[in-house]
Image (cartoon, rainbow, N blue to C red; front, side, top):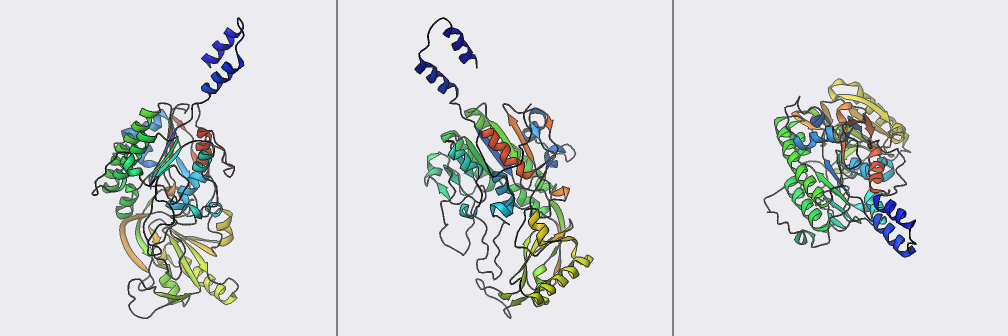
Length: 452
């Protein structure tokens, strides 16, 4: 603004060549935005907003409460699990629209054990990184879900090999020599978030992308094993706080005007009981199993009429042939029986049409939501209810306040000490799109009011 106004004052005394004015204007508008978006998997907002109550030392994350804008909580999607949530955060739409309906693909005959929604090709909605690319911005992602084969400039995708294919169906690392060119030599013994932090810092320092996505997962792992706010989880979030500080320092060294966005995908609850719904379906004759012990690599399921697609705190009930009235009646009666028995810990059952209205799996006939303390578990044989003391999970309906996730932002042009209350997860993508000055037509919700 100063340069332009000075230039115009000079123009009163002299004629300014048009080409010079054009050059000046182009230079003034050439600065591009830089956004670093870090997801801390499984981080309940209370880890930060109530850090003192939990005796947590989080000097980096706590800064966002006084120096940035933050949400008391983020209402998530159905189900509140990692892959659908992360995809909503970069598309601004519900799972029924973007196509990532759970972490794992529905595989009723167990033909592809361990297959997750790894691949970008599964997406049905435009992402922030595609919008950024269309605007001429460089993008990067480390460990972000559903990015194998994604059109991202600097990519280290999250991927776990299953038996479905010996070769990932798309780029896992791009460029192929990325880990060598960033000059970050991470020892084989280094695992998890430490490795991802080192790679991300290397990418930022070497290539300085405009939009960087980083997914840190160690907290989620400890919460599953030991429950939220356990000693193990608390120690882990303090380590992550330091890693976030390192990432922010790397970004701000390159771009002092950058904005830093912190998100999480879901909250967490303690679990003490797990329910193998499909064991109940087997006893009801809705799933047929091979007799005796099944060798590794052989599916235990020979046929199915109805099956539970489990996502931690919820399970979508799928029916093979909806036109089979007898099966539909049998499923309805069984689901009602499960819901009415307190031993199974069911909070409520919602119909498939209601699931679809709230952006969940459009093919579900029912969705069973458990009470906190109970969760769905895999397995086809034995006692359907088993103890799992002091573990943790998520995946419940987003109505549960315990399942709210986090959103915080800090940087130039961001209000300080601003609490925006509880927001919708679909507001995150349009907010980041606004920060990047890009268009994301599919994201129709209003951005979060993060400005002063």
